[in-house]
Length: 261
Image (cartoon, rainbow, N blue to C red; front, side, top):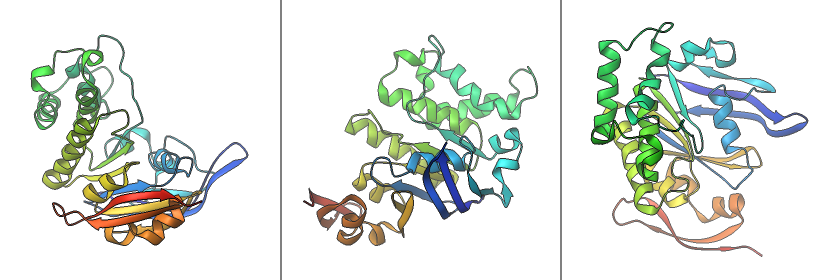
């Protein structure tokens, strides 16, 4: 399994520092959810760990190598990232979108190989999109569209999958549809998944590890039981909460919450 970590990572935009001296180890083969209030640096950290944003200082290591000094194609064979609200060109079909995930494994303008075709078919099957493979992406429902983008990411055939708010703008049923898919990919294919997510109950339910951030610093990292408690949520979100154990999952769940005045 591929390893991903950050050491003394400082990230900013021009003169503004968002994250300072961050140390983070991602557990291989697990689902990690990054939680925290808006503007705390969640998405910035994810982008920097995927080499989409430069670090001001410190380093991100992928399999022990500094990611910002590693060739892009080598990274793309090990790590896939799905940003917030991606957009496909008008008329692009589901099959065509997923085929873009095979780009890191191709040379020049070469055609899809038999293995490329196999991986695309597998991605269509595992995301339940085979019957929609010839449908334009822009005609799909929100949940179907998000599954298509995830299919493209997993067709990339990487051990690491990073997702920035994969359930944003989806209704509850489609949110669960996407999260169950990620759970299946982790369980069946041992994919290491890191996701930024706002819903704390969903984070606790689907992730093995939570990273709670506030103002670019890690307040707590651990299991859902270790992170979803009244003290941590008070510190991170400035809320008072009533927390129960979900009888279906055995995970902690917020029953109610109120802003601290």
